[in-house]
Length: 266
Image 1 (cartoon, helix red, strand yellow):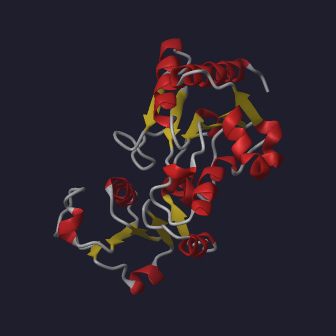
Image 2 (cartoon, rainbow, N blue to C red):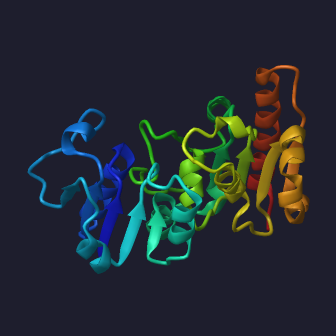
């Protein structure tokens, strides 16, 4: 099976290493020049599977799967082209395909603001409660979807997912999901605000019977007309008078439900 990765950044390089480790044929390309890319990531100019200043058509055609990196799609037309092709996938889709992490042990967190502080608060709370053997926090610094350790019993994953990553996900499998906020002006990458909305609404994709969405009253009202059919799965969290209080409300609500589900017998 042949993979090609479109877009070179720190995360896509980890994806490249993962696929090489699994003995797949993999290539990677970027429209930027080598010298411009080296300002942000470490690259070896001798690597024969790397292509700069273009995405070679012949390699794209011969690849079984094309993995899109964040930052590649900026316009709605590009997204439509990406979305209608089964050949084109994201890092999240690759994670769903190869990783052995069960959805019941995964929390996805997105939002225009507040996602990092909420993730850290939940991470610290779960560690203090010691209800899991180990809690991993995916924030694209130490961990991303391509370099997470294999799942073991009583592991739990908190994945902080930015809107560019979420837009590319063709499937989202996580029992617990949070959208902290929705603020249109926080869109710095897409040329279309509608594309930004589509990215955030991906947090509602592939919901199963016992999956949960956590959001605030204010955020729910902003998205209500688009998520009315998911209303019975949404747990509204009261916004506090401060960001800290709101984060406390998110943390206490979701950790209580996680504990309750761990003790439940289905």
